[in-house]
Image 1 (cartoon, rainbow, N blue to C red):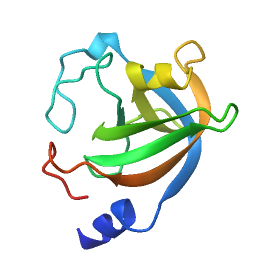
Image 2: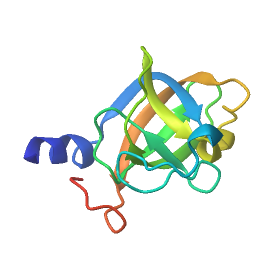
Image 3: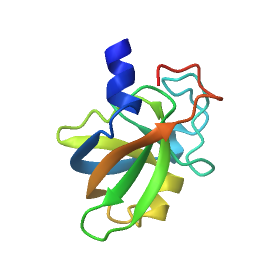
Length: 119
């Protein structure tokens, strides 16, 4: 657990890969963190390993557009994808029409008030 804390919210962790988004079909369903999924209202994301409540900056490497999101779900479950964004977050970086884009994901902080979190 201590190692997870150091990796997620200690030194700035950076990943590169593909981002996608997920939306309306899951609206209202609980995320892995237990909160309802609100794709049009909150800038949240699914990541395979980062603790819930971790704040990351997602930057499209092809356009330079970026958005900060809070990790509240698990995924993506498609090979080579490293993060799934809520529709609100995807709109911020013009990802909705493209569906998938190359990104850099950088840990920038922790939002612990809402989440009983490891970060």
